[in-house]
Image 1: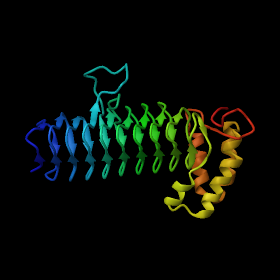
Image 2: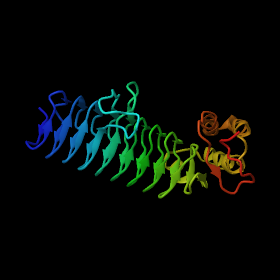
Image 3: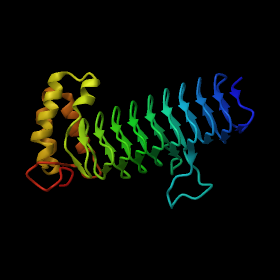
Image 4: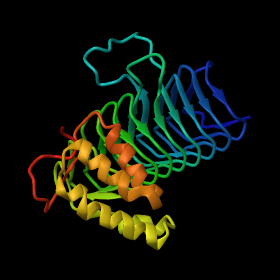
Length: 271
């Protein structure tokens, strides 16, 4: 049987693995599913529909599954809720809001580290191995790809995307998409590539060099979108990482962040 502190309230609809541990003063409401070895330390509020993967630890003050902060959403509307992956750490006062639609949940991948007071808005998708430092904020429908890191107090505009292994500096406002492997430290711009992140991820030296050259000669030039894609594809014949960057630019629905130091004021995300 799960280990549940007497002061905690657990809805009969909840499905808890026998190895789950729930500390004092927690509240579980509705269709909440907790997998093996999930631990709620204390004062945690969970609202279904919500699924939490194995070995995830949730710290005091965290609230998961509250309604989306969307003026179109009304209490009682059907929501797909939230799915949290395995081996996640959700520190104090983390908030993750339910989806505003009934088909796709707000999704948190595996091995996610959300530090204290970080927030994921409705319908967002956080892919595996992402770190959100204290008070990092994700707007609704945003997407953070695998291995990215968001510094403290970074804010991601709704519908924006941050690419794989990208890095967003603390206090930054992201109002345009940040391509994979790039580094952003000022609003709507990118300054360099995430060398530390690529090295830690085991990216081969020759691919790191190719990505650096693609950034400085293509993304920093702030070319029109079509030309940006064409030049990245040409450079990506021997480097799949550059092809990944080209595909990211090609699928963008928002403008791409400006590369600082380029020769044009036209952003690569604009035709």
